[in-house]
Length: 290
Image 1 (tube, one colour):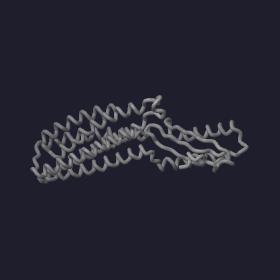
Image 2 (cartoon, one colour; image 1 turned 90 degrees about the vertical axis):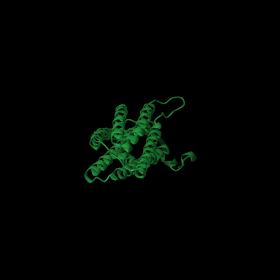
Image 3 (cartoon, helix red, strand yellow; image 1 turned 120 degrees about the vertical axis):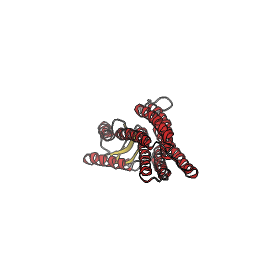
Image 4 (cartoon, helix red, strand yellow; image 1 turned 180 degrees about the horizontal axis):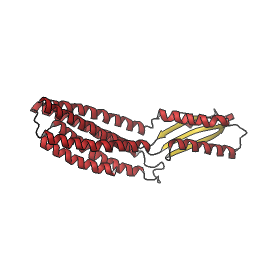
């Protein structure tokens, strides 16, 4: 994340210079997106540090849900940049298109796009590996910047070969539309995380694991619930044992099953099981009913 912040600041300077030299609406849109990107990355870097702060007396479950706030903020900043880009393109259509120093502008934009492509793919890879929405959102934002840069290059290339300058605002609008879609998707995912929306793929993996472990032991389970809070993945379920099973044996078995589930989700899994006898399997407390 520190690397992402440094790169964002450097590339912002490069794009502002390119926009000033060329007067291109497409390059200006790329620079405008980078302004919001710097702000979003700075916020994400702060959120990432806060998310790793351990639990305390007032935050018993830690601080990792700030990850969803960060990804939502990043999505909002992308959307704001998209609207600014479209506005600038419309202004250029109304006032006329003027482009200068296209060669230098294309070189600077291409270099910025290449750096962002490498950085964005790295952020996505690390974010998915660690199940971290902050890194994934930042990776999406960086790759959205790559799309913008690609549109800029396409626009300038078409202007160069056809002499028709209206390609510039057209591609700026297309880049804005792409950014708006990305920003809206990030905000939707962050709201889902804040509302503890279940990942159906993960749920199927959990059920497969529990089915595999419970069947040979003659056990059943129900009330499986899980949520991803940003850094941690919380899982809880009820395990049903034969009435004759002793408490010590049931506890040992439950601990082993919890370990299997935790191993499936990684080191940041938090698994809790509730033990109950088969004779009381359907006598659930009111507060546990979904």
